[in-house]
Amino acid sequence: MLLDVKNDNGDSFCPSICAGVSIGDRRIARPLCREFSTQALRARLGLRCANIPSPPTMGKIIFYEGRNFQGRHWECNSDCMDTFRHFKCCNSIRVTGGHWVAYEKPYFMGYQYILGQGEYPDFNCWMGFNNCIRSCQMFSPHRGAFRMKIFNRPDMSGHAMEFMDDCPNVYERFRFRDIFSCNILEGFWVFYEHPNYKGRQYFLRPGEYRACGDWGCHNPMVGSFKRMRSGL
Image 1 (cartoon, rainbow, N blue to C red):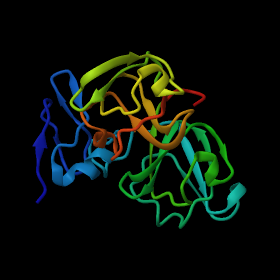
Image 2: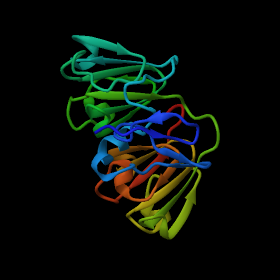
Image 3: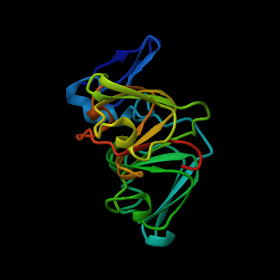
């Protein structure tokens, strides 16, 4: 059954595949309901409804089936929920504009890969776990300030600390290895599973994340994080 929900502006959206809900002047990043949680979590990264493309921008990403930009390729300049009809595997990528989040699975699910402008001659260059890319989303670089608050307990409780810059080692500054919840106040951020920006990646946009599952992670361990900005 498809639910028709309206936000504060009277616009309809689908809770199964749409972005987080705005309540007053706060953006809630948590999925709307348990049965739709995974897909809603992925789709909240920028789409009001998953079949509506992002506004036109100057960004472009090119996916190649072969390493070193060889073989069949496909150019993309907007969000794509399922890339399978365009290419079967991805072994190199060239980004000529914009910031992109590529996903291992369709509908913005699976491993996440944060891609800035540049060339990636093989999937190891974007810290890929395999050569499978099945969906992608683009985001314009954030031009303002960056600020977020992290917590060592769920529901934004326990020990808290505010950050405005990159952190190559969370434990050295936060004194905890786990981040159970966070509040992204300004800018886009990227969490990494291990220190020095290694391991699994998680993209976070402004909003409240009351549990690590809200940013697509089953393990609260975060080793490092950085701001998503030009030159990432």
